[in-house]
Length: 247
Image 1 (cartoon, rainbow, N blue to C red):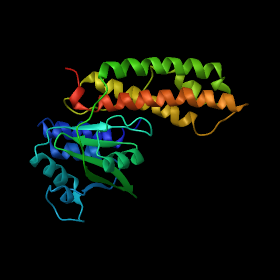
Image 2: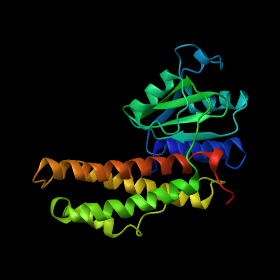
Image 3: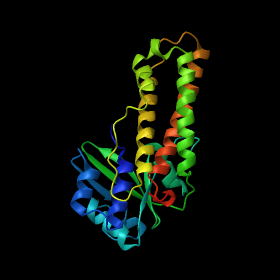
Image 4: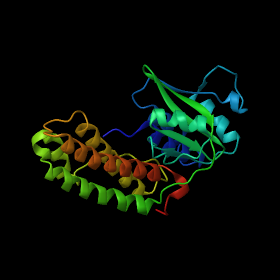
């Protein structure tokens, strides 16, 4: 199971900003298999650096810390559900296109753009946002997993996507994500369920399999869209220190 880039960045940089993780450990955890990560656009926000020249990840995050950042939170928005975003439009549009972003409490947002083996975090001005409650997101995801499993079973998911049926039958058997220091275990577990649910959705939506009618295809997609929405909201809550419960 792969931890989304935005979630890794939010978790580990928050630990770094709070003095709970050293720089080398943070870089290893955030960059992972990529060649490197960079940060661009900070100069345009008045956060130092040279216009048009990307910062290294360490220097870029250091500029955010100098501006008073104490945490990074994540967002996993989609069209019609801009969860975790508070504007302005330029940031929202970029985050929606990427499907994820991180937001600092110093008024800057970062959106990932991949260029080969390099991940560039593009900086935008970002406003305060409303976030789902961790407990509510947890309950909503559990409910949606149950309802989606029932709906897909009625649509004979085992026939058109046996691998999806297998995953739905083994929801309790999921790999554990590696949380950063300071992340409540409840949030690590919630994020794992969110990633698991999104993987189920991705596999199930690869094609319409053995659908026999347009109505059946619509019912399948409705079940999966609801599950994806709950999963994105769970990941957003789990990766946003503003709403973390005490561990």
